[in-house]
Structures are given as C-alpha cells and as structure tokens.
Image (cartoon, rainbow, N blue to C red; front, top):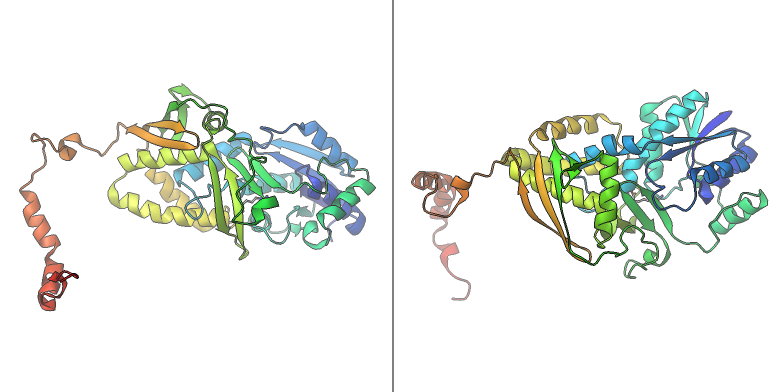
Length: 407
Ligand code: ARG
C-alpha cells in the first residue's frame, strides 16, 4: 500500500472528505493537487480558501497549478481541429479537462515522491475512466486510488463526516446539482434534471443568462485552424474563449440538453452551457466547408466522430488519438480566414458569411450567370458514364420502377 498519495483536489465535498478519509482509513499522507483549468471564472471562492480547506482536512500540502493556457492551447485547440462533439452534440467539456489534470497530478506525484494518485469520482461516471486510463498511460507504475468509489457514504453521510472533522464545506445536504466547469464550458447534472422529461430549472446556469437582448454580430478570424482574433483584435486562445463565453453567453446562446451514452453503459440526461465552444466549432466547421477538398472533408467528418469518442472514453493519451491528430493537423494548413457570426435572438446564432485566401469556392465556376467559366458541354459525357452502371441495371429490371405508385 502506498505511503503518500497525490489527490486530484477540487475543493468540493467529496475530495475534501477524501483527504481525511484516506488518512484515517488507509494511514497515508495526502498531497492535494488543484489544477486550474478555468473553473474559477464565476466562483465566489478563492483558490486560497480552497487551499486552506485542504490543509484543514489534513493534507500535507496543496499545490495549485495554473493550466488555463495549456488547457486552451493544447486540449481545446485539438478539439477545435476535430470539431469535436460527442454523439454529434457535446463538446467534451469535462472529458477535455481530465487529461490536463492527470498530467499535472502525475507530475506532482513525482515531485512529492508519492506512490499513488487518487481521485474523487464514483463508480458510475466517465471521469473515473479518464483519470485511471490517463494515469496508466503516463505513469504505469503509479497506483490509482478511488476512495469515493468504495466508502459507501451518501451525500448526507459525507456532510456529517466533514462536520465531525471540522472541514468547512459550503455544500449542504440538500444541494443537489453536480457541476463541473472549465474554460470550455459547464456540465450540470442531478436534481430535477434526473427526469429526462423535466425541463431544466434556470437556477444552475451562469454563462448563458440573457443579459443582452440586442443582436450581436462578430467576426472570428482563424489562422491554420484556430481562432486568433475577434473582429481583428488578436488575443490568446484562452482569452478568446473567455471573451466569447461572455459575449455569446450573454445572448443566451450555448445551452445543450441531451441524453448521452456514458462509457460505463448508463444513459444520462446532461445539461451543458458552452457558448464559446459551440460558436467556435460551428465557425471552424463552416470555414472548412469553404477550404477543404471534398474527399478530405468527407473523410475528416468520419474521423471526427471517432476522435470525439476516444476523448470521451478517456483515451487522450493513446496511439490512435495521436495518429488521428496527425491527420487533423495536416488538414488545418489552409483553414485560415474569417467567419461572421450573428447572434440574432435569445439562444439563436447564425453564420452569415465566410471568406478565405484559400477558398476553393470559385465564383466563375459556381455562378449561374451566363459568363461563367464552366465547360457545360463536358458534363454530357461525364453524366452518361457516371450513370452507366445504373442504366445497365435498369435495363435488366424492365419498367418496374417507372410505374407511379398511384396508378
Ligand atoms: N457527462 C459529461 C462527461 O462525461 C459530464 C461529466 C461531468 N462530471 C462531473 N463530475 N459532474 O463528460
């Protein structure tokens, strides 16, 4: 059994209780690792408060790592290249942050000479998979401990446990939402939403409360597959994401309400708010429509589905993910240009224009006016040969398909 454990610490009820519980039950030393992936945006509690709580719970130390830029420039960036939306909808908010956290958790485990890492996930979710598979990929020798998976405490029991050990927690026994947030958005679970028919209450939303009823129009400027500026004002990717979360979110854009298939075989009702992620992916995909050659474009769409599944399933650090990334990155060379987004009504965004120096759109070919450059006569032979197989087949069938149903 490990003597020292590095715990992925959030400051919430479960991970705070986990500190004391592991000390009491397993006799280990606990180092807390709090990775800032952008979850502080709306929090009313400072990282210093959270650190103090970890120490009060008995932690040897609590290290705070600022990984916001890394989250944006590596993890969100690859998700943008891949237009990543699990099951065609969910932009992988939580799934993207776990490998960042794992990387720092392993790094701190090494620095503190720990023999194990730990997380606060239960046995029913995807996050345990992401933590554990990720750790095995980066540090096969480290043990992974999951106290909350086995301790058998209800939420109320955990609150009592925290009280007994003088760990001050803001959560009450009644607090019902489970919220995970980072730069890429917020995932909201539990409460009334466990009934997939129940409309989500307004209360847990923060990024998408409507504070601007005016129409908002903005241009996203892309370079080699990534947004680099808004209305030509250059900013780093983490800043750009934060700015868009604010500007698009204020119009009410960015909510998702869906039933999704977890890796562990459970269907769950999930509510997300991720204005920047959805706006950036929509704009990026639109720009690709303009610049990617047809076969590359169609093949990329197939691989995007696989990419999103892999990340959802905790395979960020895996050979297939690396190979798919090589493909994605190769396709991004020409994804440079501008996309105009119009937030027209609460919750509604429309793309109203796109342009690129690498556009494959050719006015002379596409126009319907008489002076186009397209060789109409060439189509005659092309269409005949293209349809030859079907024509031959049809001749063997007789006139069977030519009789209208109604007669
Ligand atoms: N269902 C989403 C996912 O698996 C969100 C998970 C949110 N995590 C949480 N601990 N509340 O990525």
